[in-house]
Length: 295
Image 1 (cartoon, rainbow, N blue to C red):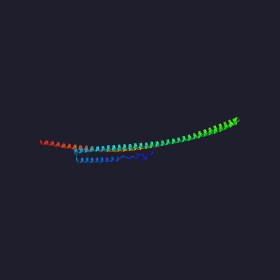
Image 2: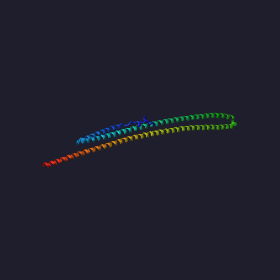
Image 3: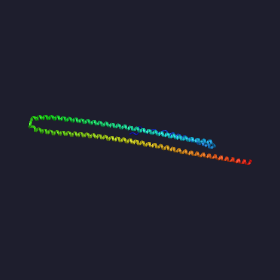
Image 4: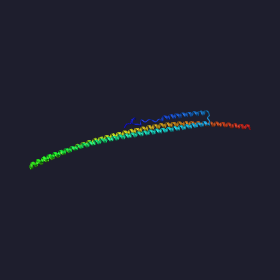
């Protein structure tokens, strides 16, 4: 069975176009995260207020939502591409199954036609032999009748003195006739047996050739199907490993950046608290000294 790229749509199927899109989207997310880092650095250097911190949190939350949306969209595209490849694979298998059925039906029809033709030829040959045999028997019967009539006339003319000679001659003729008939019967049996042996030999040879051809076609079909299954499994496993590795890497990078941003926000919050504490301490000290020296 053919297994090249021209007659096998499974091997020549185009690859999906979502790999490049995922890389572009990840690059966009990285640029946005770098922008957020720049904003964090600016806020850190300019003593950001509570509104700035809240806007930064909102921006981080929006970036997280975008990343999750991009990952979900990438997962949907990957599932749709896998479904499309599965449908194409099933269609190719159905087409190959129909072609195999058609070829097998054609071979069965040709074999039946050949057997019918051989049966008709054998019947014709057997009928012709029967006609020739019956004609030969009829000719011999007529000849025997003629000879018997002639002998009867001679017997009647010769009367009693020739009865013994006639009996002897008749006995000899009977023996010769039976011997000739037995010889013809044996020859006919031999010819019929030879024809039967030749016919059975040819029929057995055709049966063996048909079995060998059918076994060969079955092996080729199974081999092609197994090869296509292994290639499909390898391609699917490779795509799954690449996608899992990229997703794990992106998850680790995102977790690291989020942890760094949390640490930075915590430091900024602690710095603001210490400044408020110092300002409150100064204010309380001033109030204390004012109350003491005024009163």
